[in-house]
Image (cartoon, rainbow, N blue to C red):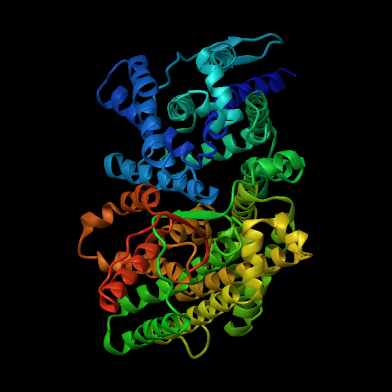
Length: 640
């Protein structure tokens, strides 16, 4: 009994940190409608600053923590709100969501540049030792004080929201931001303060949790956000008390699982997947009123000007010339590395095309891309290796293996939309990573399974043409989908599901169709990517990459087929283009993070939107010599 009580108390110590952090996440979300997936990265980044002050500069621990939590972290929060999220507050929820992924990449790039990727030991703010608790159980002094700090911080936050003028302003902005603005409340200041409080709590979370888990810039950010998301979902991102209770509950579950559960094998993987099981169950059980709160607004991207639409023949001619140039490249470029990089880019373009038809055309947000890719790749690898079937059969059957999972997500998407659907698919990707791809019977003892290239395409040049054929077919499918009746129905679903249902259209059928097609496309791309490396590897399908893929697709131009192709080629060629410039390669994470934050705030249509505007400007100059004044209008995503 003493052991069980000690285990529960230890769980309460870690759970109190999750609970406090969850309240900060929910406060930011309720005030600004931005779910900050970069919460863990902010916690780790500010903890590195605390480590720099306390260990390298040998400043007193409490002074270091005070400067980080009360000065640096709030400054970061105010900056993010004023320079990034306030500029994209009218954009679809997927834009702001992926901007927070850009924060993850940007801060990781800064951490790697300054402190490298080494794991560090962080000094605890509190003294060590143990004390006897009621019932004979023991608890560390530092754990007891962490509980006190977490409960004290939550109490102060509750009192501020309940009894102060500032708290009244917070509640007014949460209830109705436009009306609060009409009542002379400075809503921009309130949202900035919410971000400042959220980042301060994130910094405190990192400082409290890092001494127990070590400061790992690769693993710790995702550990923190996974547990905090699960805690916040207990209150469905709406209730601060329930989010706090969810953190305590998750901490106790984690402690009991670590104490009494298996320490290796599938049992350990099951323990790591616990937060995502919680998220999945809570989302599927969410009442309709709360599900409607997470749908977000109209799936419309605000752009700076109305560009003249090129005719269908012009677009077809440009696409034909572009793909003909890609086909011509291996004939004049003998470099194997360049051909491989281009093939990689074309395969990634197929992944981004699967996101364009799913999110850009139909407004369905999916962060489960790596789950489909990994399922298909490992299925194909076992078919080719264990059964001895041809690689062509493995490619087809492996791609089809992901379709049932896509269809299931499509059925669930009838019930869940917007943010909740994004969270469900992200949980699906993490559970696939922990429970399936981490299983040695699936991914092999070394973490990979051989997957040979198809017959007739063993050489790099021939495989290049296989990737090109697959990209052309995918682009043609996407173009026909957009211009046909199905594309019009998907656009209607994206704009208003209720209006679409009122016309007698089966929303379920079309959601199942688009999720299945998207799953098939990214599954085929996953198999081709593994065939290029001649093995399906566990590390190629980390769930984190799902967020990165959608972010790259948005930076490239999520609402355009050309944006997916441009993003894929940029992805594949970046390392090759800057191979002779190691300084740029060292900063590639920072560049990408800036592209997914600052550049995205300036132009939510992405890189292809800028390219299209430039092309139209050239056509205007050479067409009639007259330049029309840009007009600020909304342009629906997916329309060109």
